[in-house]
Length: 531
Image (tube, rainbow, N blue to C red; front, side, top):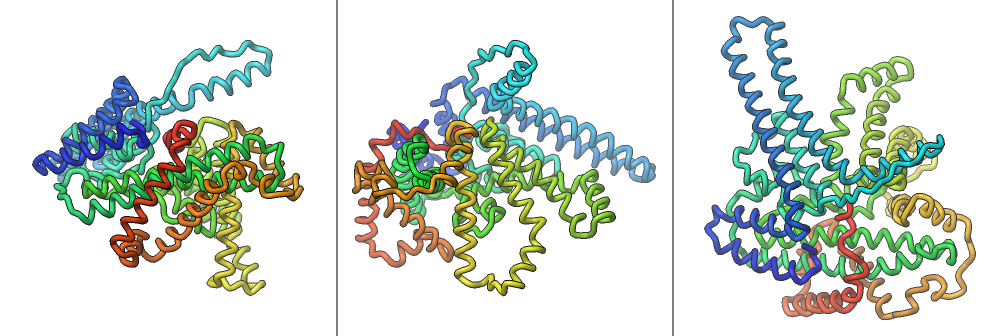
């Protein structure tokens, strides 16, 4: 079900009424029924993948926990008769069994994810290789359509299974609760990627309707629809026009197109989060926040702690730390410390982990060389900053740079935003070659546009629309600036009289419909749903 459809706008109030009408102990059953109904809009056959993921996660977690409890029981019974070697042997026996269950579950679910997302890409690369040696290419006749949100619900449930394996959370004994955790409709298509301990606490407690939750949630939803429909969808037309014809325009116009894309993807993805988090707030459910003013970051590493926070936390918890603390990686670090010094020794294990994380992050975003290079560049800048940190500190001391000064912080923010914009645009033009072509246009075509119409060609078609887009972008900036100290909604409610708030929200709805309606079909759905 498309969040921008009339069906969804009808679905929300119906679900809300039923949710608060039933006895509170049955509220999560309403969420489960609503989630399965929501997902069935993509095709009833796609529900099978939700059930496979939920069922395998449920069974694996129960099996792992049963073996852990059996090990604990057997150890207690034989404690007096077992020496240290015997206890180690017993531990290894059960650890092999639990690790086997974990491995098979990960292989099944990530295997499904890889099949749907990467098989065409793998076949294409194999064909490149074999045709280079004169062999006939493999005929790719497979018609594979990835189930909606498979990247998100796979990562979320596999994180749960690993947490049970690590004994961080108990295994859920009710399969239908596990099914809701997997399919919860506000986050199944684009996240956030929640952990069991946080989301289950919200889903399965009893909730009450309050006017405060309703008003604050509705305000956030209106703001989210404005960001997506009026800003992101309209900006996509400017982005497609400028970047789709970038050889015809100057480097400045191409760079502006890249900047527009940065605003577009932020308005698109954060707009989605505002819509679903706002609706969950109406239901008295709090979802994990996915953004924290990312474009105010002063480094690439800081940006990725503020953008798509739940994905970053997932990679950090389940990939980065296990690799960084692995015995083989620590041995490499000790070798480097012995031969090259303490700084190198402490940096090498982290760098190895970051290489793996960013290669995987690139692949997660898309099966293309553009995304692999995109991930590699992000990782490269983070690793380079890690290695160069002592040098940077020395330069700043010599140049007497005051890191607390507003001017220096502004420079860091502008530098980071520009750098990330150039990296971000690379895979988004339909291929790595076109992305590099846009770079070449930006850095080599230095002709100054003769007029505003030449600078931003599409803007001349509708100056009113372009003005609204500029004001909307400025509102994004102001809201994030206010959000540094307190939620923008809190400031809005504290400083704007009630009647004026109603007028401003109504105006926002009217502008959203007026500006965004023409782009609903051409702009498509939410961008991160494709990931």
